[in-house]
Every structure is written in structure tokens, then in C-alpha cells.
Image (cartoon, rainbow, N blue to C red):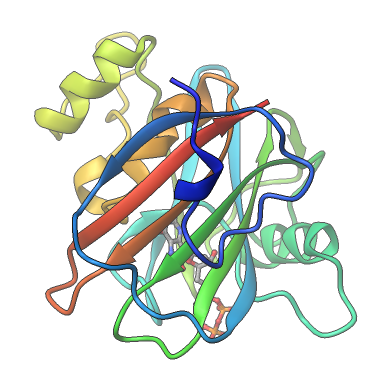
Amino acid sequence: MSANPAKIPPGLQHDGLEALSLLCQSGSMDWLPVAKAKLYTNAFVRQDGKLLLGYKKRGFGKGLYNGFGGKVDKGETPAEAAARELEGRLSGITAQLEHRATLLFMSPEITEAAHIEVYYAEKFEGTVTESEEMRPEWFAIPDTEARHKDVIQNPKQVDDASGLRFIPYDEMWEDDALWLPAFLSGHRFIGRADFGIDGHLQKSWFALAS
Ligand SMILES: Nc1nc2c([nH]c(=O)n2[C@H]2C[C@H](O)[C@@H](COP(=O)(O)OP(=O)(O)OP(=O)(O)O)O2)c(=O)[nH]1
């Protein structure tokens, strides 16, 4: 199914992306108003069938696992910020980051939406080390989209081959289960996720981009 450009959520940048195909959408209420957006990055590192995530020890998203990132500083490009954040949050990691996705995130708890540029790397140099803000941990990646679904529905499963837990979708931002399987299969995407006052996802729209 191709994505109707008229349905692209407000505030979501899609410059230069001509072919979009709808991945999923949910929620019938209006999108939350977005007057301004702040730029963030988020980087996912994968190696040998494993995904590196960080357990956020403080601040926004505390208690959740996520990729590594944060705010883009003034005068910095998102790519520069992504490299700086990865290095800072893992104490000394450098990786060849590739831009793969754009996510607009909104919640009643924040005044400015988060415009997140999402990066991907398959190789890195340095030793993965815990920082003040994040505790890194490797997780097994389900090998098919059907297996991802099973892991989403039945969390806390352990991969027999590696002895690692599968991706902890139940301990991540709720929208991640909608796009991370496609992202890890090599797809680019754009999307928007609006959360409610209860902290749960209330409206979403994701499309694969080519
Ligand atoms: N995977 C995923 N990441 C998200 C979502 N929403 C969201 O803000 N993030 C990411 C974007 C950033 O990488 C991270 C929030 O950044 P942060 O608050 O840690 O940034 P920061 O350390 O620079 O800010 P601060 O604590 O210094 O104020 O969370 C989401 O729905 N899914």
C-alpha cells in the first residue's frame, strides 16, 4: 500500500522522500498540536545478530531501553551530534553511522516535539562501557518479522543460541515495536508517535521510505 501524502502527519519532515509505503497507523483522535520541535539523535548499533541498547538510568525515558542519543547542540549537524552522543553515552565508541529514519515524537509532558534522526551502525571501535546515564546491554535480534511479533507478544524470551534475552520491547518506548523490526531488516522509515497523558501510545503513523 502506498502512503497517501495527504495523510502524512503534521510536523513530520519528508523532503526528498518520494516513494513511501504505509507500514502501520493507529488512533482516531487528532494529532497533538506541535508548535515547535527540538532536534535529537538516536543510534542503534548491531553486531553479529545482536543489538546494543542502553538502559536509561535518569532523565527522560528513565527505566527504558533505547538506542544512544540526545539533543543536537547549536552549530552541530545531526550526524555530528549522533557521533558525539554515541561516544559520550558509551564512553569512547566510534562507529560508521548511517542515517536511516526520522521520527517525530510528541507527548503532553513536553512543550516541544522531539524530531529524532535515527542512525544505524554495524561496526564500531572501542570498548562498550557504562556511562552515568546509560547501562549498555546486548540483546538477541529475532531472525524474522514473525519471530519479532512473537517476542513482542511474549516478552522476556531468551535466545538458546546466544544465551541473550531477545530485544526487550516491553521495556522500550511503545512505538519502537512498530518500527524497529522493519528498521533492523534494513528499511528506512519516517513516522510520528503521539503519547497520551497516561504514558501510552495514542496515535501513530509509520511509512517505509525508499
Ligand atoms: N527509540 C525511541 N527513542 C525516543 C523516543 N522518543 C524520544 O524522545 N526518544 C529518544 C530521543 C533521544 O535519543 C532520547 C531523549 O534524549 P535525552 O532526553 O536523553 O537527551 P539529552 O540527554 O541530550 O537531554 P538532557 O537529559 O541533557 O536534557 O530519547 C521514542 O519514541 N523511541
